[in-house]
Image: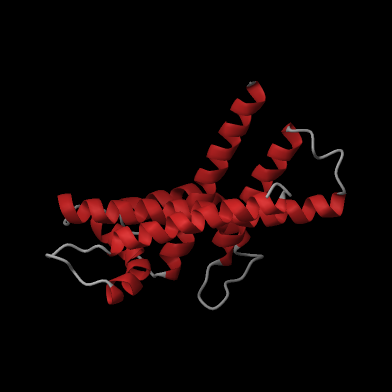
Length: 190
């Protein structure tokens, strides 16, 4: 009971930290200004980790690896804690365990990224219906646009309604299911 509660807490906190680090990565990749409430929140919650890491982890082709790699490491640590609480750490082959932890950590990072993108697409759609001129609408739309653009090229407006967010959300759901299958395969459960 307490172990399950502890794992939920660790998974939630790890997911939130990874999500904010991934948001910082995407905002820098898309060159979205941090001079807005969302950008200021992202910077305030990640500077303690990203700024020192930039001394050791260089960017790569305009990508901020000092934001991306810690998101992955946080998820690996979450996987480690989950395996430790379940008593798997002491009885497993160390090299195999490391490979599984880093692999599952990568899948978990991708899962967090898909959840983040799902939230951004939903918020973008809601802003477009309710208040397209809200202070955060521009930032959310800028985050969602590169992912919606390919769908908008294929799916025309129907009666003035943009169905591309629905198509993207369906694809994201399929990808989330594929990640779950990949994770189960790594653990040998599929």
